[in-house]
Structures are given as C-alpha cells and as structure tokens.
Image 1 (cartoon, rainbow, N blue to C red):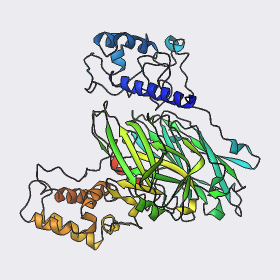
Image 2: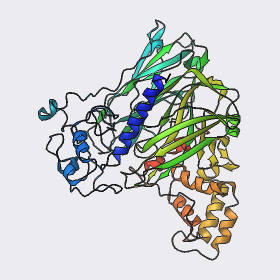
Image 3: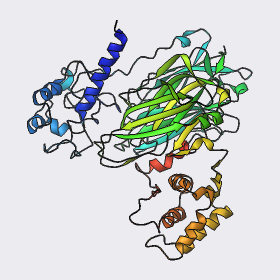
Image 4: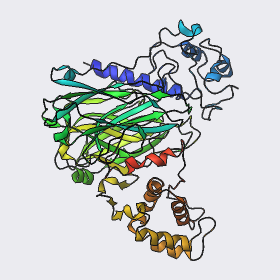
Length: 566
C-alpha cells in the first residue's frame, strides 16, 4: 500500500517546485514582499498562501488567463489598488522579458494584495491575509522548576544603515551564585519587526566586560564566545531536546549574557527605535547532557547577478571531524541558513564513503520560513564521518554580485545544529573557504600561517613582506621588471603560498584595514597576466551596504579560533 505521508510530501514538493517555476515568468517574482510581515517574502505570488499552492489570488487568476508575462497582464490592476501589475512588480513600462533584469528591483509590492496595507480601501479585500508568524510550543518549559528571564534592549535608535549589529550585556544576578542552571528554551519578543533580522545570545566569562549601553559590534565581545540561543526571522522560538540544556551560571563560568541584534534597514530610515529581546527558560534541574551549537558550510561565496542557478558545496572532511571531535556527538536539531538568494540546501551525513542520510533536505528553501529539523532520536555523528553542505542560489532579480557576508543582502551557506555532549567539541564549527579547510586553525594559525603576522602592523615579518612588495612593484599601473622576483620571494611565506594568498586577500579588509593593506594586495597582482583570471578576491573595504561583506565576515572567517556566530 502506498504511504499516505510519502504521497503528501510528493504533492508538497510538486506544488513548491511549481511556484518556483512561475517565479521566473514574472519580473521580480522571487522578491515580492509580504504586505504585513516585514522582511518576509511572498513566495507563491499567484496564490493566497504565501508559500504557494491552493487557491489563487486575483493576480494568480489573471496570470492563469495569459500563462506568461504579457503587456496585457502587465497593464492590468489585478488587486484593484490603483497600481498596474507592472508598476507593482518593477516593470512600469511593460517591457520586461524572461531572462532579463527588471527595470526596477526596489519598492516592489504585491500585485495580488491590495495596497496600502491597512487602508480603508483595502481592509475588506485583505481580510483573508494573515500577519501571524507562528506559535511557540515547548513542553519542557511548563515545569514548576523552570524560571522565565526576559532580556530586552532599552529603546535604542536603529542606525540609518542597511545592515547594523548592536550588542548589549545583561548580568545574571537573578541566578544563585552557588548553582548551575540549564537554559532549555527561548522565545522572541520582537518590538520592531521592520528591522529585526536575527538575535544571538552568547555566554560571557569572567574575562568579559559589561556594556552600560547598547553599542555597535561586529563580533561577539571578548570573553563572550559561547553561543547559547539563536533566533532568526521566521522562527517562533527554540525548544531544547528533553535530555540536554545549555549550561549557564557562575559555577558554569557564565557570569553575564551578551545579546547581539542584526538590524536590516534598507531604506536607511532615521526614525526607527527598537527594544526587542528574548525570554529565556532556565532550570536548576540539570538535564543529562550539556548542549552546544555546531555549524558547517562555506565562507567564500561569489554569486553573479542574473543567474537561475548557482551551486556551492562545502565538505567537512573525515580528517576535520577527527580533529574537532573527541568522541561521537548527537545532533538534536538542524536547519539551513542562507539569505534571500537561497533556493535549495541540504547537509548530508556520510560514513566510510557511504551516504547515511540527509540532515536538512530543503528542496525549497525559504529564508523567512526556515524548517527546523528535530531529530528524535538524535543523530549520531562520529569522528571520521563527513558532512557535505550543498547550497543552491538564484539571482535572476539581482543586478549586482552577491558575496559572503552577514548583511541581509549578502549571502551565506551554513548548516546550523544543536548537539550534545558539548564537551566533545572545543571548536564547534567545521567551515571551508573554497578548498581550504578552516578546521585546521590552531590558535591564530592555519597551514603554518600565523595570522598575527599580518594583523599586527608592527610585526617584523609583515614589515619585511610589505616593504619587499611595495618597494619593487607598482601599486597602480603595469608590471615593473624587478617585481616578479620580489613576488616569487614573498609568495614563499606560508600566508601567501598557493590558496592562502587569496584567503588572506579576502579577510585582510577586516583585520588589517588601511591604505597600506590596499596597496600591498594591489601590488601583489600587478604582474598577473591580463588574460589570466585573478585568484584573489581582494576588494577595497568600504562602508555601507557593500562594505559589510568585508566588515563583518571575520566573525565567521576566523570562527576556528573565535567562536563562530551564525
């Protein structure tokens, strides 16, 4: 007999695959915002259900008459709000054709939902549109031994920048000093949904310093490196597996909490205020295991514009899992993390060269509706296993290249998991940069390259390397005759040997900004053949939307020796 659950899954896959197909048939089909859920997208543009499938909305009914983007469909006002479908989808002149970039890619509105939202003219037409984001359910937090701790930012002005990171610390004075606690869940309180992208809380030890007021930050503060809870857009909360918890309290070495906000403000408004936060659920009744976060994936992404499919892969090799794991671990939950260009993703578990199972098989990935996979029983991962992450991106509506970064319009490719026992992994991440395994970091070194040589501006080796290149090679212009010999010499340094040169060029805008760094990496490329593609990814560090790719990526690129922040 055919399994009804399998049939349901196949029908769902067929439906979601279908609406992704139709996204290509209209301009900005993958960029239509939800009218009353800020930062969410309406993936099934022609359907009443934002995720696609089921009854059609007025635009979907009109599209069914034409089956493609025609001038007639473009000039219709399907939702009756006074704007043509073309005006709402960024093709006001009705000239767009499939495969080309739309005339406009900002200020997109929904052609099947009446705008402006909440107005008298649209209230009746939009009665069936829901603005709810999901209900948090967690059986473990209802016990009498569970304490609720709500941590919120004071009302804080949101910077007029596309992407901002803000940190604030909280003391744990409500916890008894002679006790240990397990953090077993969290629930978000979102004060300003227009800007909130994600929240991360990390545990701080005695070496950390308190913040008296919220401050801009790019990385978890010194001494605040242990990730305890993560909330991201679309998640109703986090509920920890019944046999594990995240240990906190003075006896556990966690004396305060650091909370980091990621704000997205693409319009760069100056009037936004936010005081969001999390409610933490804590118990003195310690569970059997201590929990922690683990991440795997790729940190070197370059996604050209206008592409229907870009595939990026990352392998946490058997050598890496042997290096980072002292014993088998058990995965409790897992989810994928890309941004708005994300299309499909999966993390695959392999053992002895054979596939064991898919861990996060998102055939249709939705950034604002992430699927959290709960493993019951938990999935065992052994030292010597491998994890292969595959991310598929779609950039048909983008006119600029997307790179790796923590900005909302940058991209990521991560699988994020909770696991136990926490003690099995001191370095709970297994990341790659291209074909470079970042698991080999030891302290501040990788592949015999000590990053401090480049980070420390007064380091004698850095001074010699920079002088050798800058004294013999042009920063701007052609190749000097003495330059090739100088380059051959400096490229014997472990930090500039082979792929390490490209890696250093990628991270140095973060850890070594300044004109001298710009000149050094520009001079390194001065003798590259004009017809030879550069392997370096050097880009000048700038502020604003584009610059955030460089400015914030160090929190992940250096994750192997400073706890990775998803």
